[in-house]
Each structure stands twice: as C-alpha cells, then as structure tokens.
Image (cartoon, rainbow over all chains, first blue to last red):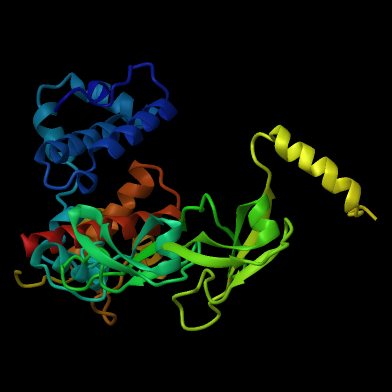
Length: 302
Length: 88
C-alpha cells in the first residue's frame, strides 16, 4: 500500500480537517463517474479512498503507525483497506441506463437532424426558411414621373428587372416575390423588398401631384404675348403667353403633373411666368421709357 | 445487456458496507427508484447510483440540495453519449 500521507498530499502533523479537505479535493478530481472510462482515475480514486480510511482521524493514524512496523501490514491492509469492490455509475450507463433514458426523446431529434439530415420540427439552423432581403434603388425624377424598367443587381450577382410604376414617390417599397435568399434546401425563396429613392429635379418643384416650373419671358413677350417652349417631364411643350402677362402669372398645363402617366390624379404642370429685362438697357430703350412714363403713369404699389 | 442481477437491501448493506438508513434516505428523496418494491431490491444501476451519492456527500462534501442536480446532469451526459454512439 502506498503511503497514505503522500496519496492525500498531507503531512503527518496535518489535522483531521486538513486531511478531510484534501481527501474531498482529490475525490472531486479523480472520481470515476466524473472521469468515465478512465482507468487511471479509477485506480487513483481507490488509492485516495484507501488512504483516507487509513488516516482519517487520530485513532486511525495511531493504528496505522503501529501496524506499519510489521512486515505483514502491507499484505493485510491491501486486503482490508481495498475498499469495497463496487460498480461505478458510468459502468451501468452503457448502452442504456434507466435513469438517463428519460432524456432520450429530448436529444434524439437533434441528433437525427445532425447526422441523418432528416427534417422535423426541431429547428437547429439546418432548417432555415428563405430570408427576405432589403434593397435601396435611386431613380431619376423623370423615371419616377414617367415610370421605367430598371435592372437591379441582387446579392451573389443575380439581376432582376424591376418595373417602376409611373408616379412612384420617395420611400415607396416594391416587393419582388421569391427574389430573396433561399432556404437551407434551396427550394423556397424569401422576397426582395426595394425601397425607392427619387433624385430631386433641378427645374421642377413638386407640390402634391402638381409640378411647378418658373419660366422667364422677355419684356416684349410679356407685353405682346407669344408662344413659347417650356420644359415638361420627358420633353418640351408649347405654351401661349397671353399678351400683357405679369411676373407671377401661372399658366396651367393640364394633366402634366407628377402622375401624368397614371390613370388617376395626374396633377398639372404649373408654368410661373417671370418677366425678365434684358441684361443691358441701352440708351434707346431708356429714352423711350422716359417718354412713355410721362404719358402712361400707373401705380402698381397701392 | 446481461441478465439483471437484483439484490435485496440486506445483501447490499453487507456487500458494500452501506447503512440501511442511507439507502432509505436515497429512496425517500427519490434519488433512486426501486426496481422491486416488495421485497425491496436494487439492480446494479441502483447500487452504483447509491454509491455515487455516498461519494458525492461524503467524499466530495456535496449538500443534499445539490445531489439531485448533479445526478440529473450526469444522467443527461450519459444520455447524450449514448445518443451520439447510436448515430456514429
């Protein structure tokens, strides 16, 4: 038998409490049920138990010291203090233990998924559904008003043709069914959601469904009237400037608003006249106006 | 699996140097479930479980409240091990 003090890593002067503390510490470390199938642990645990039984208290230690003097002690104590021949719990658990079998239904499905690839209700991340994907698409003002077909590049290089309806507004989200990420079996796809961003126009202002544009006219166009060309979304249109028009006068182009290509609520294009003087007033014009002013006074500021 | 060997409580006390009161305490706390009630008999699994409980309490200083928790965890571990073996 090994020296019990060495086995328990204690000194001969150690107290009962110190011996017990060391015994417990080593038991936790080497217990076979905490180290299943480890024969070294099992052997060590038995040594620890034997050692503790031998020196657990003062009386046992004195008896050990006395018996140590006799040569037979080694053989005898090996038989006496072997500790019980016992089954350890882990030895009774394979292939199936009665107590551990109560958990089997909890884990069977999990392992069926992992090792056989079978699908069932347990979702371990191997059964992910198709995922929806979010995109953002910036379009020109003209495309927003008139509608367009845009090629949209999705993840992994896939492209789809996105039909932009005319009159679409900023922040509208278009849904493209089945264009999202696939599920784990590559069968069902989620949807792609495309949020529309509209670039503002440099010449048109949006007021509800109406479009407003400021159009400069010459002095003589304003006085005499004229047919002028004005921008409209996607092109040009001819507008009749009535004679004697002032700055601020609004001319309406019916159904030429933001939703002009839509079926309802098309809106109008409003042309706001800005009477513009020539860059340089020559002497002839100035002298004419002096003369004209003396004969045709009027008071616009009342 | 070999033939189950059942031992009566008296035999177990003698063979494994256990106290009857300890085995009764394990039964009353439902830490073991008897295979046979009358007469009270334990199989190897129960015996090893009782000895494990004794080790937990005496060798490792585990208190009574912690014993069922530790047993539960050990049982779950063994179940997982067996399940893994089945699928490997």
